[in-house]
Image (cartoon, rainbow, N blue to C red; front, side):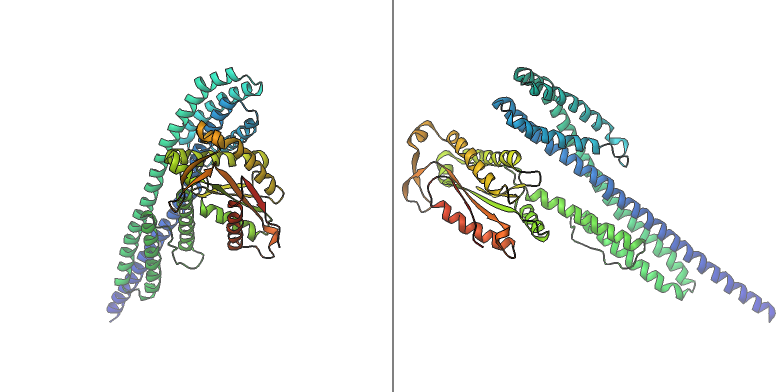
Length: 440
């Protein structure tokens, strides 16, 4: 009897030890993989995505520098030097950010290319400082342009490779999560089969968490960034779920900004404009909202063609950026709603000044859009939107200036409605005009 009891006791002890061992193995393995997944996710968010954004910003800055440099060397207008300097300073900030110690050594070739370009750009800046336009043109042609092309090509390849790295990282997260799930379930099932009913609750909890995170990984890998894993608590699973949510929001924001930007002018579109207005309203920050519309643009496009119309829209976008850069501040925003409609968001003090400067610049620019015959006549014959033939004057510009402080409770809808009302009034006036809404 004693022998039987001893044997049963050993079996119970052995069974209990097996349950404990397998339970510890399951929990330890799951926690280890969760910790590693958290580190991998933080690396993606804090390193890989930051590098991706930095490379994108460098590309956009170089393209902007190229545009300004061409205009400056052609027009030889010292006023463009300040805008070029702002772009160069912005480029310097991005270049310094490349030296972040958290980045890997893969950025060393890029840093070297950036340093070479900055040295060449400094030579060009020195020539421009002394107004040595011939020497500046030579430096631009022989040095800065080839280096810029080389750097842009490298950035394009690097950005593509970085995107592949991010996709690979996301796929690995999904794969590792699936592997961790399978192994955890296997170890836990062994413990359950060896009679550990008390561990059932823990197993189900881990199963739900891993399944939710796996689903989130698969949805993000498939390009659906709106999924937020529903995990409560402050453990590693909850932290990983929070990281997934942040990663999804960042990816969604990057996708929206990319899709929202106007492809012709590269100016921010409706989403970015609405976000800027809402942000200033929420911060109770007074601002001026300039709604800019071209008059007689459609008949111009009908007469001169789609390409000429697109050139006009691009040049007007450049004009707005130039005027805001010279007369506004770095906090001002220039946006392109679409077609011939633009928006500028600036401070209360500069709203009216910007409107006048835009009209002055457009008045100087508009004759270059027309043939000598139409310029001499000051008008041309065409059909209106109803198919009626009539004579149209040269293009003009209408600007509705809406200050936010004339509302007791400003809102994006109210500002939009007032812009439309003022614009309709201005479009029936002769010439280019702006109107500052003063009524409370």
